[in-house]
Length: 186
Image (cartoon, rainbow, N blue to C red; front, side, top):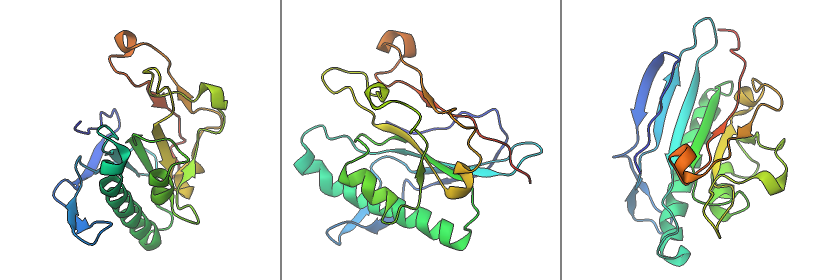
């Protein structure tokens, strides 16, 4: 349930939001149930970028019970990223991880905002093949990489992919996602 980032690229500043307190959907104080981790990556000879790693609470136990918690977290993820992008519009960042919900849901749309502040990069994958959670009967896409406009511009076209496999092959009930990005100029 914890989040982490493993990187071959040198790591800069790391910010944990584990103890960050914010106002929930109902106005009460809330914390992230699972960390929202921000990691600055410093590619040699390239433009730095940020990875924001999320693992939203699952809907286990019922959506009605968990939705208020999840929406509070999603509003805060949106607020933090929107603040960063309003202060530094050219920031290259990727929000990625296990969102525990499909793209069309209220939770994902809350993070994106209206108009969306982040861009999708999975459009090259046919809908029938968008499966990151490989447990039956729930087979669906719940793991995403969402990019700031500056990072989306660095995407190598059609490089987003899902590595399909069984639990035994990948060590998880999730199929990994990956994409390639250009270094950009420092």
